[in-house]
Image (cartoon, rainbow, N blue to C red):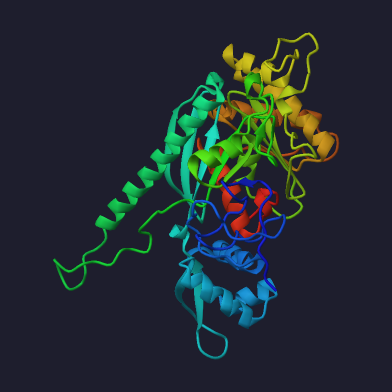
Length: 427
């Protein structure tokens, strides 16, 4: 029997669940059984449990080509009758649509179904130390609108919350305007001018499912409370998730920037282990071990930049001396990206030796500004320190300047596709 559960890491005004107006919670998340979403309505129609999430995930993976009901039954282990009921409901809710017919090996051609990406959206926010990025993405993870503005993370939580609220409203307005332009540009009705055109399937952006927030740590993603963010101790103990949920009237998820970025990087298989190293205004790591995002028991894993590697090194914002972050940023400030890459490479080699990482991915605005230097430099250190066999490959993550914000949006979308609030990755 299908069941609906709620996510532990999502805050709303009256419930932690993401669901539809008057409907049940998003499917496939972990936690206690959920009731109806009692807060401001999110734009996702009713999803009745884990089985619906499995079907949605397969529809998403199939893309525009679509997938037949028989294939859905085979891949989910559900009966054809159960699949028919689920897909009928998804079609009625606007989440799925027919994508044509496919030749059959026997009998009549099979009708294939596809996901309707524009049926729902999510907002992703990247709160960096000096910049705020807001994106709106559809169910397929495609960016619909983006805004970037200056941000002073040290200006105080209340001022930051006000700026976030303004940018969420602005990026949603941008998406509505863009949708209106697309609707106006739709082809005229075949009967000629003056005949009303039906609205296209993508018309109407509506309210997002929720807002994913990614920012520097440390923080507690389970409670949505920030800790002593490096360089900004005044954030310690601030209930950011609950405050934003109340201000925006939407469910909110909070996680570290590196975890959000890692969420947007699909593993190569269920056993894949990789490290995403993010060097921007700070340095952190998103760790994926055996296909699962690793946060640690206290949700603080990935504070990679504050490994002390030089006991008499420069003072770091965290209060220690000789942290990898301080050494890397100091080298870049001196115009020596190759030296920063060498230091970063030794930190990456420590991770590889300690955790058995299969590959290393590099991202962040500082890496992006000197991408060739960092990829080459980190790879050289890993090759020199390889103890057994071929060195671990190193590559640029390739997510572009909005990778963290788009990953934050995936924190909202992941439970819709049965991925337990972004803990288990993949598509």
